[in-house]
Image (cartoon, rainbow over all chains, first blue to last red):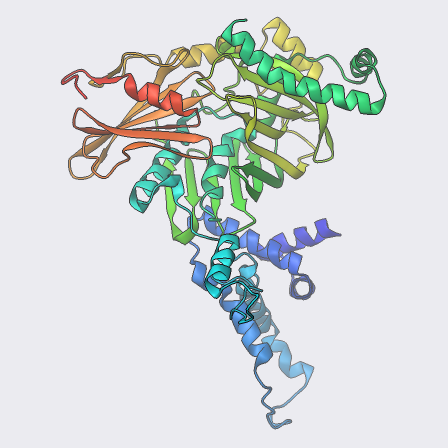
Length: 197
Length: 352
């Protein structure tokens, strides 16, 4: 089943589905976060292959919009002011479908994200009980557990030198002997140490 | 006991102890376990395993989820390796943390790191491709490594044979490859430090291999080919690898020379390119055919690395030598990059 969905997703990305088929896949995408993750990865891979940079700030625009829409009060507009009926909607079905696809292309993106500066569940205000640790020490303790803390790449506090070493390492790796999946290991190192901990 | 023997014992002792423990838990005597192993798996030499791995890595189309562990860091990555019409396309994308990706197509690799940092390197036409693939050739490696079977286990739900590539000294790391019995693909690779402990591990948590490999390679066929010296389909034999390697052993057209390199290492590739208004970068690849370091010499290299540093198991050292910025980087122990730097001299000025 999952394999069929993957195949359908891939076909959707390549524009190979009919409108009816695409509608089903879009419904599935809306329901299944795992599929959305897959959709996102396909786009990222495609973008990376085309050499397109991914602007991190853009990636959660759709999610923020979705949350905003969900939390905004509903505006009750007068009903029946527009003509209704399937025959009148038919010419716009294609446009709606394209809009859905475009929305999903963005909507599905933000499942991978930069961790927030303050992790969920972190205390926003320190308790004032006498037995509780001082606010400063609790903040310091939270800092130690913070996900996504910036790290000194190459153990250097000079970003320019670290970036230069990144470039030299990639250059080196392109000419170095490759040994199976170990051929990608230095890249895994590069990628891993770029994440921050 | 010689140094090499000590190194071998260090690397073999841990797996042997683990095997004894497993055997004891299973209620079998070691002899019975050995017999059971003989009966369950066909005899394939470690050399044949490596040849098969080299062919599988290049020829198979596979996709899966990788787990990478190093320095207490745990990452999940998605890898796609596709072979189509002889062209290899490889993508590595992070599944945890910020999105980072590496793509490799033909002679170009692009790394997309966080904060929109892009690194793209295109290999120049005419630069030898001798080290790109099929580098693990047991005959070539024999001077610096032992190749030894280390048993069998399961990875990603598949049976694997474990082969160790064990360094004879402390100038290079070792490897443990867990090779899929069905396809030869390495499903897990351990990079082994000089103390015999894994310092980086990368493993498939799940993998999907194209059911129809472009070139069918059987254990028996490769083993027979290895014994006879005939190159199996998709593999480069020892002689071929040696010929390709030695063809690059020409003195680089450079004023730089290496007086003393760590044992087994030699300069096997030289390249240079302009950088900046009047600058130039010279690149020397120093390798023992498996471990390698690159030496980058920049005429106009202000702001470069001074001293030693590392990222994971990759070490780097930099210094000013004869008015140039020299940076040595590679996935080797710290002592190796320092030795390579120490051996570099400039013919013209000869001073550091």
